[in-house]
Length: 519
Image 1 (cartoon, rainbow, N blue to C red):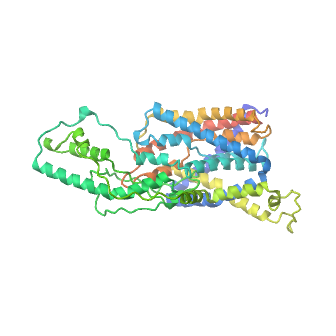
Image 2 (tube, rainbow, N blue to C red):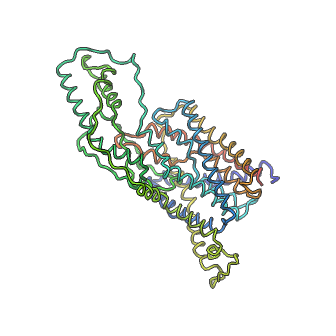
Image 3 (cartoon, rainbow, N blue to C red):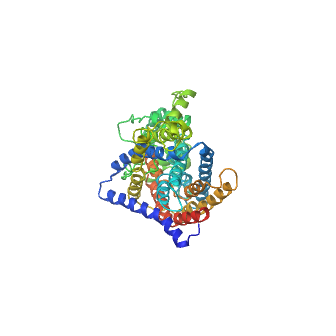
């Protein structure tokens, strides 16, 4: 390109400034209680189901043709490659740094799924307004980013990647108590203690039988891959208060109404989803009873952990498991998760774009024998113009919601700074370097043509973005109703805040370098 370092930095900083101003507008609207959590959620649904499909249609139809189809496969391959790199990143952070035990699966999800929504879209739409890019590059860039969005959606929802986030609640980590700190074993038990023990055992067994049926059904549904749209909320059968030996209740924070940002690409898959109820296991029951016994005033009311853990077997409900769904039901459910407005728009746009006769109905300049409308434009050009008009609202809405979402994050307990910094460096420094090497290697093969500069730029760009804030919403969804996701959200908030702050530097450097080597 021949530009100086200062010019490259200025070109790369312009999209950052635009995004920051728009996101700060969302922060201000949230502070003024205009963009409340409920309003943000409604606006997210509008942006995802109305603005984004229009944006995809308006950019894909004019820019994609049959020659670009092989490049779409390269984009899918690159998206999977980045997610594998993110998986390795999350596992390294979990294994080598002190990550909170309650968030040991969430940290892996934070490494896998990146913000492939409005961040790359905003960069592409801003950068391509000036040299060295062209107007055609803008349409191509949006079309290429949409493929990364679809990869995000497919791996998160239809392929059930969100189960990794849910696992922190369905299979919670149990800290092993130190034997030296266990209360002394006492062989004497008073009659009152024996009677209380019998009543406690009956109450626990009764609660287990009550929970066994619906929990088996929920677990089977998750294993069988039934999409979230078919999961109905199951009200509790017990109207009385929950025993303290079963769960530990905590005051709920204001997280439940927290909104999702632009990364919540396909919320229809979660609309009818009820928070997962954790299965009460023998170990969790025993541990809760140990804790309650440790607070007893009389020493003869205490029991050792070994005595509690092996005193009885968990009761098994005689009810038969629910029947497994048939293959056709699974296929129908899987198909329903794909049939969302963005995916329908993407598929329809590609079909129109690769068939010249159909494309000539929307795009001018194609000699396909299609008679123009009275204004000299193709007969369906008004549809493309309308889609462009509607789609222009997609990115500003998403960035405003992103700012509002980040402004509502709160930190009560900050995990290890070593963990937070490790994730930020790996995701925003190491993976972008790997992405540049990956893209350069692909360019040396026949997979990427020499003149496909925008394709290479989008691949590099999507490897340099931080964790998707969709995980905030999913963490709240999967949290059981009797608990609050304090520890998980505090850890996630810490990781997100540092990444989005560091992104201002790392993304600018990545974009400036990629422009220098490509143009």
